[in-house]
Length: 399
Image (cartoon, rainbow, N blue to C red):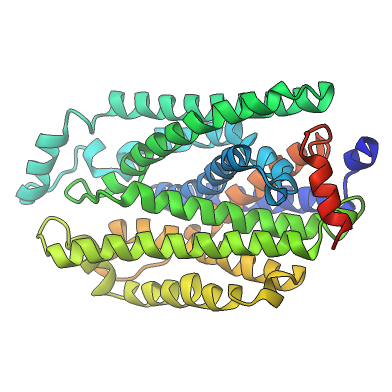
């Protein structure tokens, strides 16, 4: 069976080829855009980078969650999850343009603080010990070191399990995943502060890191479901994936939709009820301009529509319909990331959408998907010697 599971569905090869073309074209357009407006290039690049980093880190968290909990739902998607975590070296390279343009993105890193903005100057004075370039880059190195370290050992021991069938490796993967999830939570929280929340140094939210984690888990689950439906159309996974598997994945997707909505509403409720002058401007920029329409779209298509659709048992067991639902969520995840970031640059002047805001995530996404597909083809599509694999195959044979 292991030889069969090494075979690559033809659609994965086509996905890889098309993704590379789209990625190269998108990055070429970005390069042209950089000559037109360098500031806008870095702003749009940040949106694309945060989105695809969210998909990757969400996959890292879910694969650790699967090692801790077990279950057939995670076994059938473990290899796409692991392949996504192995794109972290690519993301480290893609972080370099942000490192170059940091002074054009973050006002605390530039020397162009308006003289009359006493509130901003006061905030920068008190946060200078944290918001300074050496410490910022040092933290970024630490984040990537943690993420790469976790991904390395999770993939290394999973591969060794394929080769040796050593049952002790299951325990090692579990032992790493518990502390790994804690490290994931801490690093993502601080990365959220550094890379997104510090766009406005005068604003803060104690729940912002958790909000981004919820979004990452949702992005990852929607992406992996889309890939799972693609794989299920071809041998050998067409004999592994069942309606019951998609039902389980659909329930998890619904849970993550609700979790994201809970975190988003919690942040809004806490800040709006507190009504503190240092907190509410963040929402005012998004409610008192064209960005309010984007916020309404998020309520309708990021929460309400997926929530209603995923309540249906029949939809969750229908591969095509759940894939369409997942793709809608992926699009809305991009809209959410844009809503979190772009108003910090344009909010005071009202809604603004630049063509590079679309070119950046498409270009970076093309390169990321090309790299991901290559990693997916490198290993069997199931963990062939995991002691829990017979349960998965029995689950497949019984439905």
